[in-house]
Image 1 (cartoon, rainbow, N blue to C red):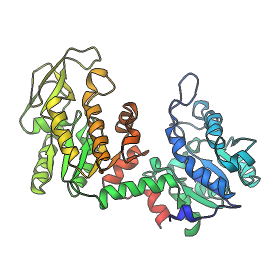
Image 2: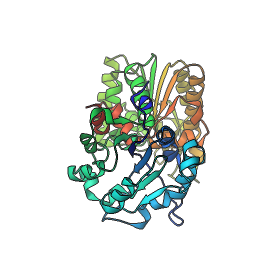
Image 3: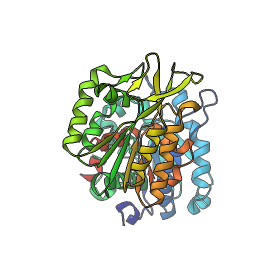
Image 4: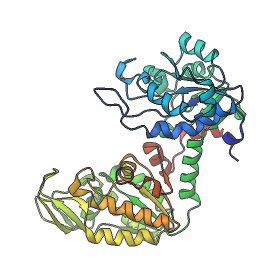
Length: 409
């Protein structure tokens, strides 16, 4: 049993770092996607059901100079209240007053409300990033936060790669038995560990997105782990050009062509099979209403650009995935936000879901990949969908994440 699950929070105030950095409608300031809040509910409810109380701290957006109304966490109170107290037994009993809100995350308002918090109650602190000290990892600021609770729980995998006051430094002020991961963080780390360190082979990594430069480190690290690496999206054309192909007006990082050549050579030396798209859906401009055609990915006419993988690539990538036992997916195959160029990404989602149904372990991570599986309705047909974009990427690059290291010390 995990440290969190075996801990009894009865009578304790749990200070939880959550990732409530959710998108808000620019006009109404209402939440447009509550997945990050829902992901934290099991952790919150376990503490409440034990007879503990909860103090939630998070950032929202990127405020530049102190408090800004559009970045205030007060905008999520009503929705959070509904989610937390709709199905928690202790919530129904003790949470009649609803979510309490401190208009600051330190200072008298936060200190007094935290001190008077009763079992079954939830206090939400104002945006941590209204203080520059949060992102600077300021020790004095972290210490002030730490005094609000008896136990520290980090459940914000999405910020685990940041050495901020509330994600890493704060852990110094709690003894080992009183700092731990929440259920979401535990499952994120366990899923990533399973893929990186205890994967069943064949292990296929699907790496997509626009730029090779964003994915060099993850590809290099995966060359030590994977049997197959599928490369799609805009970054595939830099590899195509590195092999001497004609890519028309497709996206290409000229300064990364040598890097692509080196990665291909390393893969060959390590007997890792790199799969590039045999063909592409091409367009005469980057536009939802563009003229569309198809071409071999290494022979795209001048004036045309590849915006999705083509049918031959879909078939070959699908075959690779269906024989895989472990799958990591980070990045789309094309501009899936436009209907004309979403077929490739959707086909990959179908293949990953089918492979999962046959017993493969599949982890989907990174904003666009997660958006794609949600958009196409496959989120519940893969093994795990990660909430941490940048954090997951750095984890698979082999970096130590400050938010994880701080708990494990």
